[in-house]
Structures are given as C-alpha cells and as structure tokens.
Length: 417
Ligand code: SF4
Ligand code: SF4
Image (cartoon, rainbow, N blue to C red; front, side):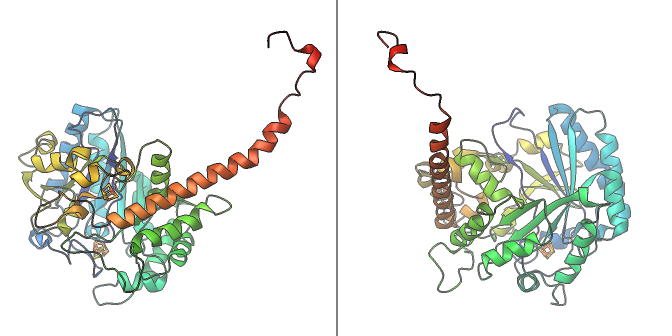
C-alpha cells in the first residue's frame, strides 16, 4: 500500500496502556488505482476480496458508538479517526458525511479532541467532497509519489495509466484559500531509483504543510527493491540526501515528520513518527464488515498477520486492546530482538517498523530489514546536528566575548577574589 496512514505512536504519555488513540476506518475496500506495490491488493493478504465494498450505515453506527464508548471510558486527550480504504472517497460523499455526522454527535461533550482525517489518492477530490470536509472539519492527507514520472510509475490507475495529473488537480483545489486549512499534507513512498532532491522539490511544489516519507513495506522474506549498483544502504543514503536539502534550506519549507522526529529524538525528545523511537504502535483497523484488525502494515508479512478474531458487533475496543496481537504491537522495547536491544542507537531507531522485522524462521525477533538504512540515516543526521551545533557555538562565541562586561581594573578586585 502506498497511501497508508501516517501512524501515531505511543510515546510515554498519560493514557493507560489499553487505550487506542488511532482508529483506521476502512470505509471502502476497493481502489480505482492499481499501484503495483500496494500491500492491500498486491502483497500477501487477500482479505479485501471478502469484504463488502462499502461500510454499511449499520456498521458505521455501531463503530461510531464503539469509538465513543472507548473514548468515554479512557478520556484520552486526543483521538485520531482516519477514513481510509482502498480509496475512501469511492464510498461517496453521503457515506463520508453520514459517518462524520454520527461520530461528531456520539463524541460530543466527551472532553476528548477528535481529529478526523481522510487519507486519499485525491483522484476523486472535488468541491463537493471538500465542502463535506469543511462542514465536518475533516483534514485531508494525499498520497503523491514525487515527480510526475515517479508517481505515474508507482501509482497507475487500474488500466495502467498515470494518475499524476488527476492528483495534481485535486491538490490544486485543496490549496484554494477556501479549503486550504483542510490540507494535512502529502505522503510519499521512497522510490530509490528516483532522484531524492528532485522528488522532494516536486512534492514541495504542492505546498504541503507536512510531508511523510515512507519506506516501501518489506520483510526479510520479501526484501525491498535494492536498485543494482546503489550504495549498501540505498534508502538511508536517499533519505540523507533529502535531509540535507531540507535541513540546509535557508527557511523552513515544510515539516518532514520523519526528520522532525529524528531531530527530536537526537535532542532528547520523543518521536511522532512510528518509524522511530522505542514505542509501540497504537492503532486499530476496522474493515467495512466491522472486523477488527491489527496494524494493516502487517498485511505485507502474510495473509493472516493482520487478522484478529474480533468484530465490533461482539467486541469492544477494550477487549481488542487486551488481545495478544495488539499487545505485541504495543510492546515497544520488550518486543525487540537481542541485536536491537544492545544496539547503540536503539533509543532513536527502536528497531524500525515491526512488520519490517519479520522473518519466516523466527517471526519478529529480528532487526529491521532496513537496519543498514536506518543506521545510516540516524548517524548522518546526528553528524549534521553535531556539526550544526559546533558551527553555531563558534559563530556565537566571539559575540559572547564582545558582549561580556569588561573586567574590573585590578584595584577594584577585592582581596581574596
Ligand atoms: S491508491 Fe489504491 S492501489 Fe494505490 S496504494 Fe493506495 S489503496 Fe493501494
Ligand atoms: S534495526 Fe538495526 S539500527 Fe535499528 S535498533 Fe535494530 S540493530 Fe539498531
């Protein structure tokens, strides 16, 4: 899947461990694009074929009540509800509005901020949809894979035609002053054969308030494409090149969550990106039928890895949170292999995404299949930050010397000082 949700993570916050704060709502199980690397349709899992196309009003109502019930019990500060698919806009404006109305009503006066988002390929985005989003305060995240050439290669429609122009048209609407406040950002999957700086600048042309750069989903059994003749850590060096372009810009052009989180961690803070930090993922997925599933990135592992036996008709989200599959997702450092636990950068890296650690021989008890890339990027960013701080100190130190008050003349120095 190339248009997944930028995941929230579970840094040490106040909510009790059994609280979900990100609900991924699969409004529609199909897509009008045919991305060759989509983990929903093209990897191991075929569960989408058994799902109804659209979430019914009855399931929507039940789901909204379940979310409200969970929020009421745990009173987290914020909850994120992401409308997702397939392509969620295929569900139609009426379905999106129905769910939004119901959720806003059910969660009114609970004291928790409900962030409602839609993650879309933007091909169906029009003013009518945007007016629905305005009415219900729904933030829009768009999946776009860099330059037109790269995007068209990675995100063709079902007939194999490029989709860049359609997406760019949707983004132009979203950037209109009337809708601009809805613009959540762009999500781009790294294409290691594309030029990194060209990719970043092509994304920047759409004025995103935020960028999410994602590694293609892979495991030790199904490793990421490593273009012939590239560096030992091609994804790490690709991201490092984008980091340098972003970090060295004379002004802050946009927020890149992957880099912001890495900088925060290097400076002793916490991460807001699931990729970094020794935290657990705090996400629950609800299929159009009402089936409750684990983090859907696990679909890249096997046909069953994301499946639970839970359903919103029979189980509430507290029951789901107690399920061993969800417990494993939120295990954090306890879920890491020995190599990661003794790794000098584990506090920053956190072993990468759990799905990326999988090997058929021993499950998730491995470092990430992107280990070399993650380490490369972490070391690169740390070196850049260290150099930056050193240069800043050197620039400031003459100023400090000149602004220091002059030393008192010798006769004003008290005896014994
Ligand atoms: S646009 Fe559709 S096919 Fe492409 S990654 Fe997203 S869900 Fe999959
Ligand atoms: S994945 Fe690699 S770099 Fe990351 S913590 Fe594990 S061993 Fe260290």
